[in-house]
Amino acid sequence: MIGGSREAAYEDIAVPIPKGQTISQPYIVAKMLEAAAIAKSDRVLEIGAGSGYLAALAAKLGREVCALERHEALVQRARSRLRHLGCRNVDVRHGDGTAGWPEGGEFDVILVSAAGAQTPAVLKAQLAPSGRLLIPLGGPDGVQWLTKLTREPDGRFVEERIEEVRFVPLICG
Image 1 (cartoon, rainbow, N blue to C red):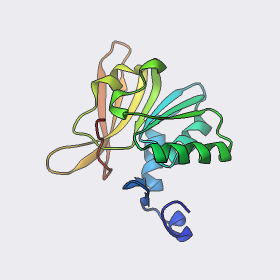
Image 2: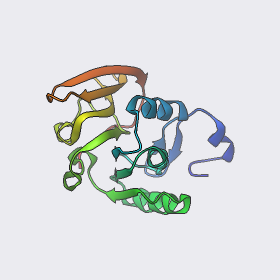
Image 3: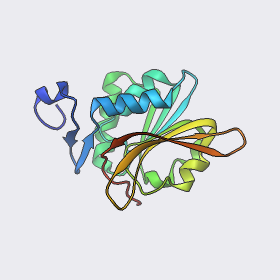
Image 4: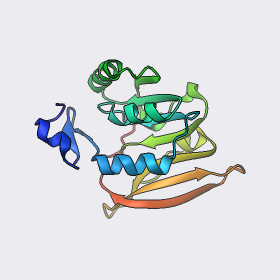
């Protein structure tokens, strides 16, 4: 078990992992994946790979998953776990998620597992036309909303609030 007792794996709760991070509760992960509507042909970018849990699920749905994690120790653990699970279409790298994956081109889906005050412009720029970006957004009052941005073919973004959530902060650097 990653962050505690094995019994926690069967609860619908966020589970702590090293470096002060968490695995999001299964209900929220399911909401993100449902809203993302990942197709077999989709390329997915995940920001905040953590344990690799969301990347493993996205890998079963899409063609390719590129995952960024800012904690090197978590990167190594996620790579090992994903290899053990047979997820061969996932690349986990150490890096600043707010900078995106510049060499990756455009992504059909971007999943951000950390909350920001606004969506980083670089992530919006890496979203393909008709792409979906899921990110928890919050204001100074501390309230966060899981938010879906869809990039229209003309480049406009349509924003939809999905549900109130609580995520670790999206940190630059």
